[in-house]
Length: 290
Ligand SMILES: Nc1nc2c(ncn2[C@@H]2O[C@H](COP(=O)(O)OP(=O)(O)OP(=O)(O)O)[C@@H](O)[C@H]2O)c(=O)[nH]1
Ligand SMILES: [Mg+2]
Image (cartoon, rainbow, N blue to C red; front, side, top):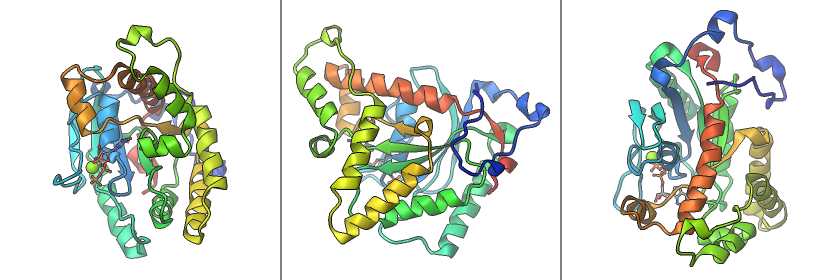
């Protein structure tokens, strides 16, 4: 595992170089230690399942199903891809109101305690999910910013965008994906698909343009400013696009009934997501700076 440090953070003094000894730490059992953080209901658990290519390693919420609570470490989780994770699917922070300083402190305290149990006391990718469908208020985004501000060593942090594959989002701004989906939605087999869906760079530009030009009410303007602020904290290599399958699609996939074009998009974007996530090298937990 591991590529060179990225220079995504403006203040490079925050990036502590690893010593030779730390550089030699090898991943434990080839397992990546992954931490998933973010706001309630944004797809934190689904992202873990997508990475593992599994439907239910991390329980997904919805309907009557409760969401993730606590900060449990799951060891040696694997899916059909063979990729293995030790992960903490941390409970979410609130989305409806700004986090109070004390609330944030307690949350971080819990995260800090939980990560101490990672094998080897090293940490790999730290994911912050952002549900791009949820744009009605800015407090959800401000809460992600507040969490991020508390992590001084951010080289392993990624912003993971979710829910950009829904019909409403495709109609609103993800037009290229909509066009691609329409072109292939009746295709009977994957072999007949001969173009790729839009690149993540293309979707990034479309999303940014949408946030800058289409958020008109006062509340939405506040959300727009915060989304832009959040995006600017990451370079493009650290902004990930998770094409998560919903419950019904997961069932279809398990039964081999997933539409070929949906399966194609899932595999296409998953491959990029996994490659980026695995590019995060392990760093000693103490360097995370919690
Ligand atoms: N269409 C679509 N649905 C998604 C996506 N990501 C998550 N969902 C759905 O959003 C709901 C919440 O997903 P979870 O993965 O449980 O989100 P979470 O952040 O772990 O939620 P909590 O643990 O309850 O805070 C579920 O119904 C998912 O199927 C996505 O990228 N696209
Ligand atoms: Mg969850």
